[in-house]
Length: 167
Image 1 (cartoon, rainbow, N blue to C red):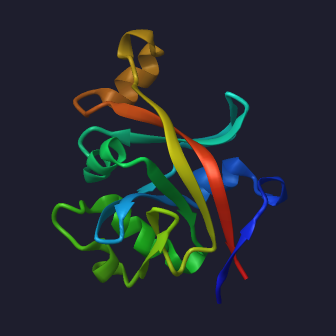
Image 2 (image 1 turned 90 degrees about the horizontal axis):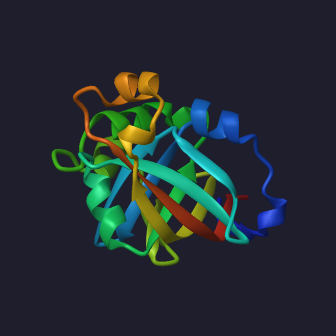
Image 3 (image 1 turned 120 degrees about the horizontal axis):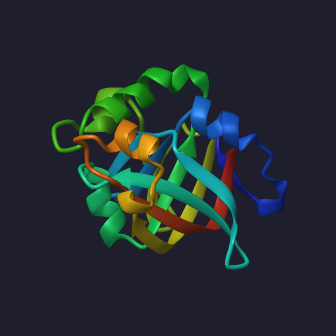
């Protein structure tokens, strides 16, 4: 199977199901040096008259280093048969494991970033903005639930530059 580029207006998905229930791999870097992590927090929409993806990464994650230094990142979605691979990529750090080797995923270069041959849908994004969450401005229940003793997230907004779908 191969990937074909599709127009942004042809993308059809339920973001609540796709992000929260099916998860995705957030990847930054180039084919020679990258990291990926499983995520389920994100947003798809429009900002500054651009189609955009917002992804959230804790400072403690290895992917954070790549998100900080790279201009592009990918958001890759997989079929249910890759659930265990995504689970591994969310549970274990790229500092300790070669996630592609451990999961059998095959990294591929995509428009200046990295995705995986097994992905069903890939959104390539150019980073436009990043900002740390400010706990002083956050609902106290959310702050207490998600940040008690753990590092905060940085939000990354990326302009959607290309979308690929497996055929």
